Length: 391
Ligand SMILES: C[S@@+](CC[C@H](N)C(=O)[O-])C[C@H]1O[C@@H](n2cnc3c(N)ncnc32)[C@H](O)[C@@H]1O
Image 1 (tube, rainbow, N blue to C red):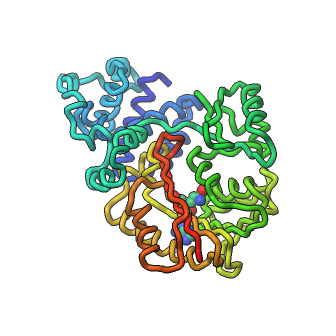
Image 2: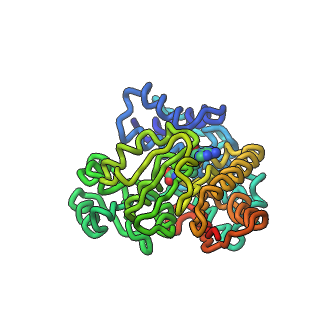
Image 3: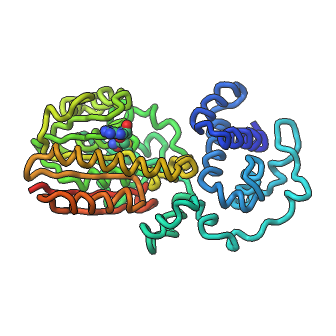
């Protein structure tokens, strides 16, 4: 496909997305139907669609509208790409620009801050209150692609060795300072899942802040730990690789844990992971309970930008209520003297410190031992962690 044909495909997909279809489904269906599209075309179209979703408001400002066509035009202007190189009118390409489309937009610097920073208006005050001085750098980081980061399985290989093996495979990579197993793949991360390193369970995809969060948990060999919202098991695996502990993995949607036993075997830590799809209560109490609760995902909107525009005020309030329920359940499962770890990939106080403040105000016998925030880009997605000790 020509770059112009890729732009035309992205325009159609963005228009379909605006009608309400989930972006991943649209991309999968498009790739199935577009037999002429090779893997680099699929990657390029996906990148274009995601770039637009990350910068939907600023691209709209620069392109003069919210249609797929206006947004791709705006993205060209934001990235310094000559629009006429894509809007050519040739076969499979978008039509040439009209006279109105050719008119120069007002500079982005004149746009209101939520437009410049690509943030929904209804969530603006919450972001200002939660982020303070970090507001602009944090939201700016969400406007750009997040790096591909892997976790080296330190139970079986050193990071230096993994870096050497990645280099042998032709992949440029660098260690992430302050996160012992994290390695960022620089440039295209093509073929990662075909490497022996991957097949042998020596590396896993995992964001650097997510790894840092697991490294900050008070885990000691011999502990019994519950991962109450295990999902795909990213943190379950990282915890079990970090120390000889027994990790019980639960999720309200057990199908999400489907691949966990296979991934645990690949990593050589299967005996440490005990899926508990039904009732984690029956193994309580635990030394540590991790509640990595469902959240707005606002710290990870660089990776999943669709969420920025799909989240509604009602949906947000429901999430906050769900988090409250999970936190209360998790608290009851911790043994006296044990720890409760509450985590989100959100930037917003109502999902983070307000939840912890509420718990501390309503229940006695808890001490806040650790509270940390990782901002987007430093070193990965945005995350929040609170560790509380039970008397
Ligand atoms: C942020 S994700 C977990 C990500 C996972 N810990 C990881 O590191 O890959 C939140 C998970 O919570 C699960 N969940 C939602 N409501 C829940 C509930 N009431 N109890 C337990 N899990 C719940 C969701 O199915 C989802 O998998």
